[in-house]
Image (cartoon, helix red, strand yellow):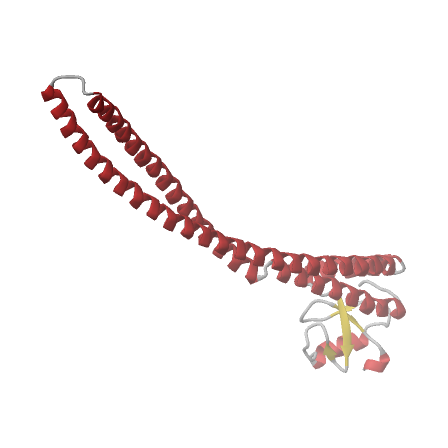
Length: 245
């Protein structure tokens, strides 16, 4: 059985307090890192980003369609211009001039149809651009919210980390002044059980919160004051004091 002076065993409670603070800070860090708002915003941003991407593709396709429509109108307009120049020159056979007139009339109708198509594409493009702009605003708003929450969490995490470093420094300094053998038992118990030490207070283990059985209490009372005893339920070191009996 491990042994340590009662005064040394009492130090375990302060050490356990520091370790409990470190554990609470680690739990706080995990909570901050897993803030549900981040996941919700990431999901929303993924959806909004996908819709923005689709809107950009639609605008790109409509712009390409508009360029083709403009090119078609320009091509027909150029042909009309050439035919009108030939017609106005008055050169050529009469039947050729009549054919030119018919061709110009046909091309003029064709240009009108193409201009209607061009106008329809342009109107559709304006609508698609407005939709893209609206979707971009949604994405910007989500990113703004994300950045704000991220800054808030980063600040909170920095505070937690700073406090954890302060507590760890105090813990390291305190542990250096403890009995090495007792400290080793405590560290092993802490690693295995999650709680290294706790008070035995009026027959109740503060490690498990359970009142010890008469048999267990009898065994502990029979142990020497410098014996290191353990909670039968939690496995933690039980620190005793005549004041707590």
